Length: 407
Image (cartoon, rainbow, N blue to C red):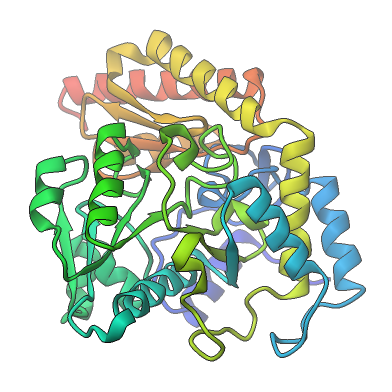
């Protein structure tokens, strides 16, 4: 097998791959548990987990075995045929969520596209043509396709591709009065993240989601929860809506569902579950046997190993330790389970990311002051301690430079 240096890979990427990513200067080669190694053999503690994807860590034996077994049996047929893994996965997802039907896609953006199309068709029932507006929240993130980037109420993602699609309106997150004002009989759906991830790890206020539910009921609109990042144990429950006692009509999933293998899902309940008819929506690769067999193993492993409860425990432990060890550098800590945000007192989040990476810790910066941490659900206290120790050193060093004007 040909071996490459990190510089060769970086140059090859620069020459051959479209420049859509501002990559970190590391070429990762392999992973095991909560750690990854680069091509030079350097070890990193992964507190990003592929952006909330690798919930079982890297190279989990059950996941490896599932991929190998299904790949050796049947990888793809298209949705023209029935296959065994797809309805089995659907049955499991419906059992743990209480929803009625599932549609499978390849990503979170595709799952959200399905939800948007479903809502638009729902608004056309009874022959209506004026019920098409979808309300989303400022600071949200729903994907990169034209419909989902329109739903994403952040100008930095929209500006290069303007004009956006019509029929989307934005309200401040957690602002009940603004949501009430925006609502009306022409609204077919309200689409929210129970915890805004890309926006800075902001959990919803219970009263906000409760009012969203009441407004949707009163206006015959669908309530859609984008749980692409919060779903599958990340927040300490299977789904974030279970923290709030507010059940949406439609819920989208991806990221953690495949544990590293691409898959998305759009779940619906009640009247929303029967909106789509044959030909309304589809996908070539979505719900293929390999993806579904892998996702089913993820769910079974999380359940068997009690990782939802474990995520709650580790999240509490990490944030408590962060408050005690890093408190002088923190303005706030936020999150649910192992979806955590550290709000810094200084605008140095990107510097912290870079310095932590140099010391062997992978974290994420969302904005100038917020660190986002999304470790695998399998982490233990020693991994939390390791991460806190690195962040403590980094923050002390950067804070000192900031104070002395050498930033």
